[in-house]
Image (cartoon, rainbow, N blue to C red):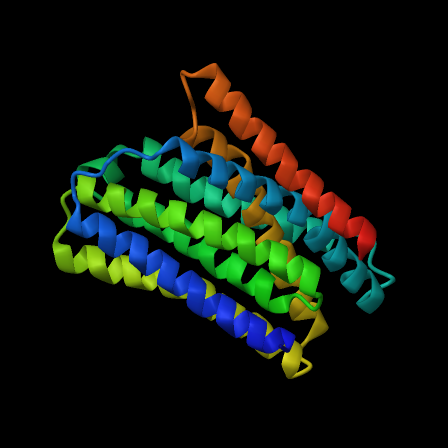
Length: 250
């Protein structure tokens, strides 16, 4: 199987997994508890995202940019990475602290936009990959993370009692973003697209990975049960270690 075919299959599975979780929850509106097992898988995915950002994506972006502009000393890839991080943080802060957003019921839409931007970025990161090992690990992380994100987004939309049509449109749009990102990333690779565009897109995606795996993870996965919290921390660390080992082999 070629890498392109593998990515196409990954895109389809990610879309189906996201929609399956959403449809299941819409049919069972009383299923409001996020299980411990799902939290463990999400912690592992967060670790993979964190490791991918530091061991692979950001270094690759820096190398590509240095190759193109060896005379530029300002850390442009790092700036773009921080920009991706701050953009998601900004959107989430608006939804959690802005009284106008609360009064107008904008919160679910702002948080949806945050997740949609990340979904597109993670798909692009997978689509831009050229090695099977990193592609497989990102696919596993995205698949695990996508189900959890779909769960959280669906519960949020139901909690705010949005019209059913708005909920379905938002969930479909969210579900298709990662496959779209995979497609765009693969188009850039296969068409010999701009190396600069690929480098900057990778740096931006690394920033969103850093945010989702750190501040977002901590905010939405706080536990009164210390043992559960430490177990999730161990899984997150395991994800980081796996990406570190892959970086050694590749």
